[in-house]
Image (cartoon, rainbow, N blue to C red; front, side):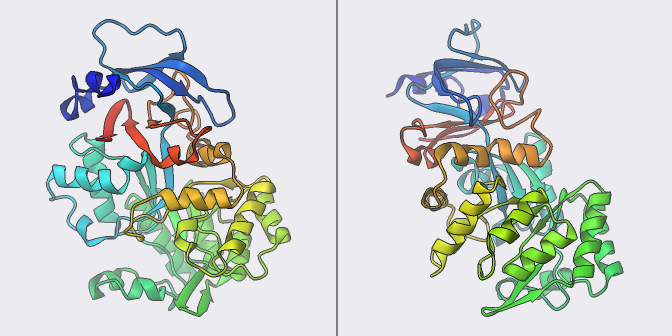
Length: 397
């Protein structure tokens, strides 16, 4: 049995609520750009990082994890998930252990301490979030879009095929600018953190319906007036153009139809300060996956901000390894990927003073990997511990 296990045996699940903790004998990457600290110690006090270094003393009596050979990085973000599977229905009344177990399998076991839900029934997702925030349920921090805004008559075919008539009625797309503004403001008033637009919607397997530009512009302006980021599902070149022209902040996917998505349009998106979430696993079976990867690489090479995201929840296979493998095939380095998982999303949400790096004063959202990603890229999907606010919310067996 590895030595670090002996330490953790002193405080398994019950002590996961203790927010003061030491992690010792680990390789620490303070950020994606900095050199590693070898055989380092991280002290956490009251949910925040107190000290990081190779010569830090552990106070007597402090619970400790010793994890020789492990690598510690800032807590991972997943910028594209969904809480739409039937198992999340009625989340306010489900047993806490059931929700904790579901969150572990879906998210925490992959190192995610913050996730962005880009479309779900708001009341249900907020119920999950409330129970996590109260400490009753262990899980990542959740930001949510609530219900997406679709083009008139533009609910995607794959959404229609999987939803009940009751939920479909909730998804009625706005037909006018005023309807769109009302829908955005209602979502925000009810607790949404971002706004999600389908600037290009696959209404059949072969047809993308664009969002009318005036509806996209009015929706984005309403979100920005309320201080919220706007995410877009673009689908194709026209969807990207509408996203750019309407002031969207984040492309929630790489466009699946890459025809015409050239360096010029990507450069415009980068100049406008837009971020992109590749979700390459979603497209890994497509015939044009190499072109989709080319768009991701060009966006990165032009100085664009990439944010990690998997579409987990829509994809019910929660294994994240394929996403990392595809990012490697897109010629992204391990440091690029670590930046996508940590610093870039924190900066996007203007949370960089709290999250995204391993330095004193930061919130203790941390991910501990089995091995060093600089040596073995598979380390990114081999997570030993996930720690949120100093609490262990996942440990591998």
